[in-house]
Figure 1 (tube, rainbow, N blue to C red):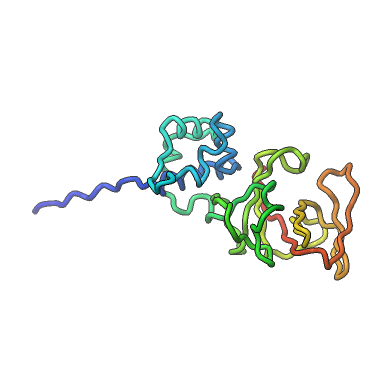
Figure 2: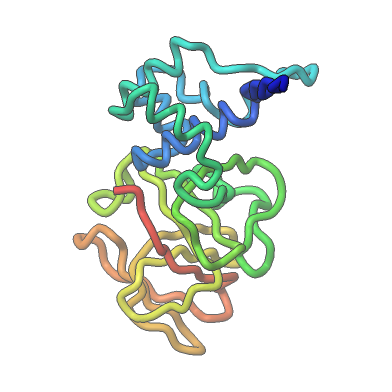
Length: 217
């Protein structure tokens, strides 16, 4: 009886990049955050770098993968498991730099991601299928969040007093703060820096508010 040899599976472009996304998530980082920690150009692992302008697939170099593994304190064995593990650290959600979030048309009227400029990141699963992530840039949200941290926002999650939230005003301003009080006519917010004074926003000026459900700290 002749045994048929099993066909060897070939690694795909999508599998390698998805594994890098999961590696970043294991380290509590976005892909650009992992690249920065690895001493690479911050855009090395960005989605825009994964395909050339003429549509050809661009693969990460073995050197960049090795540096990413060292930065994430992981081994090649772990990376191999991340390639095989489609579940990884949860589903992929849209990701945007928080500095970009207040400009352009990145959200619909309900606070869900829309338009261009989004990349993706593998993060812990969220019940809300409209959930999205923001990567913190700079130190304006210290001490709560540092440069490179990622926060997961759920537009559909219930919001209570004391929750950390993201608020978008109709004028286009984006704020990350703690909810002090929410009423029909006004929203009272406390900045994450306790040294700053609170702020009250008229309810009619609020485009949407969504709760922060996870942070990569």
